[in-house]
Length: 207
Image 1 (cartoon, rainbow, N blue to C red):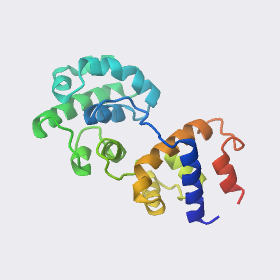
Image 2: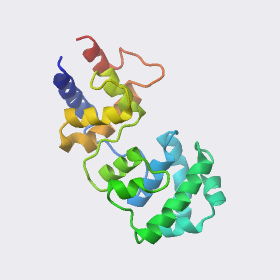
Image 3: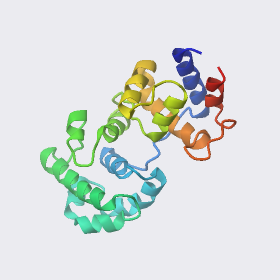
Image 4: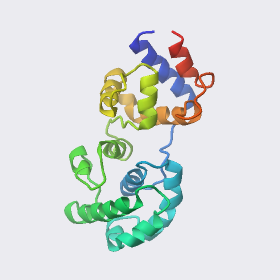
């Protein structure tokens, strides 16, 4: 299999398994998506979805969030990793969105990445899933699988993102990155990896 053939095989198999992948983080609009994605760094989407209902009941927009004290935010999200830093960033980014962007989440990579606690991956998720801009956010699942499938050299997430964008058609990016995440969780986890269950990897590695 050439790299292009492997990429096509991956796309075809993922489309069979996950034809309509939902965003795994519960949200209702660009702001709540931004908050959820920011909170998901170094923790699971499941854990984030457990804390955001209480958080959004208190504040589901920048104006309300900026009125909360950092300690209040931290208490609500204390179950997730880096809660102290995330609480500070959440209050500060909400202030910036409210004051600088008139309460509206900005829709460019540059403006999003200027917000506290928002890196390129978080900005990519918001740009792709909230605003429909073609992007290919690379998380640990995608980085691991792209390497395992010999679609990148795996040296960095930045390189993996570049390779993914070269290999896959732009119109597939927003959907495909979700499909790969779901496949990684269901068939190719980082721990207790079973090649027999991970049929995409098995097919690719056997060639």
